[in-house]
Length: 423
Image (cartoon, rainbow, N blue to C red):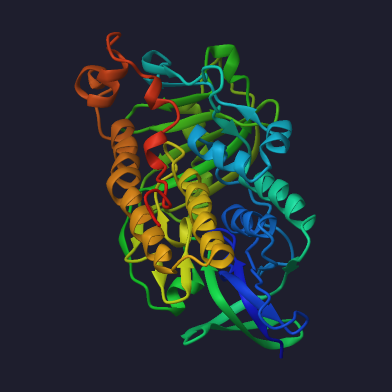
């Protein structure tokens, strides 16, 4: 049995089932009163941990897996979240491993462009970053390990969470047996199937889309056929997103599929879908690196705070991947939550700031991210490609030369300063 009286943060993404993040407190090795934060091994949890560690708050990361999750998922970070990576001091290393996504277009299945937007930043602005989620986690993890007082505990699965008068009691299963930890705060950054959220009975309201989605990584010369960094294909049968990834020659092709099919049936249909979607002469010649069918959700927790427990990233909210707002929102959660926890733990501010974090970040998801991401799917899957450029308000705006589109590039309105005006 071990005691930790700090902040634990733990968790990765939906596929891993990792178990949350504990933040702030002390362990048996620390003198009484020394704060300690434990943060999980996904990008959101690690980013909170890094920010806190750099603020002089010792942290510990709990992770159910024996390593940092390696499966490729999200890969696009809008400029508003790239700024958070810069604040954490990891942006330059991210730029070394990633690339930029400067242009996005909407196309008919035959390749004809319906509308497009140039996202190249003006001087002094942040760019759109393209970097695999697992690679981002590795960069943050590398920086985090350099911090004094940082600690990562792999093979630690959170199985119990209970608020107490002095913080939160956490039960963890390990290869060495069950451990009981005490922490002032717990941050659940453990993905869409969050154990932290479930253990606290926090409702996760919303819905699951009836269609399937198949995400593929493929080597194919899309540039040869005029494809840009991001390409939304508008078609009721073969709607999809084709986007360039950071690895040379590698592209992500995520397409919608019929409901009710088994995973094997979905994989068996992949050649047929590529035959319908990919440009170029036949027979097609491509190198399929990965094909992963899954369901997508639009959900939001009824609160991002319950006592001494905070939720962030996919544990707090889920949206479809079209538009790149999922992990972008999670990174913004991490930045806001870090600001609040540092103010509470280092500056003695009231923990009512944690309620402010919950209220404001939840409002951003419900009023902006959720409706926009739903519209992104319906725009490419439920409209007529021959008329959508004139009937869809967003595409119609993109096609209007009189409208200034610079504010659309970075999704700045997804950011909220939780500290603004707070004494």
